[in-house]
Each structure stands twice: as structure tokens, then as C-alpha cells.
Image 1 (cartoon, rainbow, N blue to C red):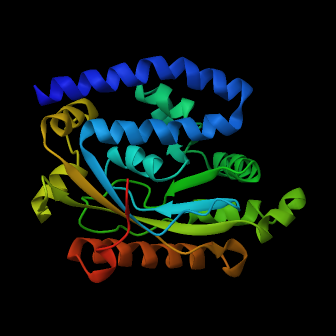
Image 2: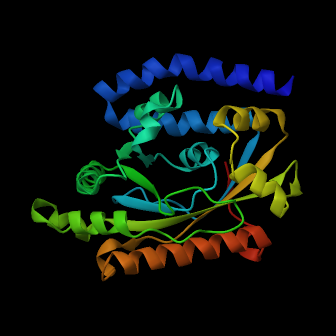
Length: 271
């Protein structure tokens, strides 16, 4: 019954807002950036997902957000934290329904099989940053099991730092900042999650997204802790590898602190 009610609430909220967002993309980009933020806050409430936020995403400068990636639920959670868009593999654009939602949120799609596409993606990200967007990059390149952070891939970081310093984008390098986002799922129904609980949430394996979503709707409340790192100018990093190392180290520290329940993870704001 819980799953049915939550699912009905999701549909009742989502379907009427889809044409609204499509219209805003044509006539008001500022509101088109903010509506998904409001929408995902409501979706998290419907799904019983509580979010604890440590730190704050900057709003006065272009910001690239480097994050770990646990599950499809990360999209809802991070979008509820701040008005953001995402970088995703091109296959997502063709997913039924989810692909439409991704396009409505102005997701940047990248073809990982074609090296030339990385440069095009960097140009699109730079353009979007110039427009004031906050762009989330899942730097592991895949999802983890929720208990660890996988090595960050430096290729997209390299494309972005190169794109930010080429030709007419030179001035952009002085303005772009990088912040890290550490995602950790910490409690279910108010009780600390175990290693196995997080693995069941984060690693889909042969389970499809529909089955995973139904399992979430059937479950009780879930709490996620998001640790936002301080803003750092992208120009302070010598190269893409230095930027990737910094982001990976900071994200891993945030995840470990949240999972251990150390003092830094006990404060923060709630969404």
C-alpha cells in the first residue's frame, strides 16, 4: 500500500510538470533551472528520503561539482540539494521516461566510446557554466556499492580544464570553481544502515531500475548525508590529474566521515 500511494503521488506530481518544464526551457531558462530543484525536493518527500546537507553549493560563480555515484537515487537527492544539471552517458537519453526527465533537466550527454565527443562535451559544459549552471560530474564513471569511493577518472576533468583555457574561454578559467559532493546513505527507518544494506541500495547488478525503484517505494524512510566541499578555483590545479586526485581525496574523506558518524556528520541542514 505504501508503494502504491508513493507511486501515485510521484505520477500526480510529475506528469503535469513535464509540459511546464518543457515550456520553461523555451521561454525562461532561469526558472527552468529552478523547477527541477523544487520538484526533486517534493519527490524525495514522497519517497521518504531525508537529506542532511553539510556545506553549501556556491551560487555566485560557475561551479563544477565532482561527486561519487552510488545509485540512480543520487539524481533526485543532489537535485534536491541545489539547482543542478548532470553529465551522463549518452545511453541515458534513450531510456524510457527517465531519458525524457534527464533531457528536461538539461543533462549533458557524453559518448564515452568516441574520444572526439569528450571535446564537444567540454565545450557544452563550459557554455553551460558561462550561463550560470551548476554541473554535476560523477567522476567515478560508474556506480559503487555505497561503501567505498572508486578511483576518479581524470579524462573529463582534463577536457574541462583544457576547454576552460582555450581561445574565447580563457577568461572562464579565472571564474570556474570546483566543489566536491560526497554522497553517503546512512540510515533506514532511523537505524544506521549496514554494509549489506548499502550494497543492496547501491549495486543494482541484474536488478533493473524499475524493480529497484519499487523496492524503494515499498521501504520506509531513508537518510542520505551530502557533504559539500569548499569552492576552489579550477585554475589552482596544475593539470587534470591533480584536480582528479584532489576531488577523489576530498569525496572519500566526506563519505568515510558520514558512514562512521564522526562529529562533522552530526550537524548540517536538512532537506
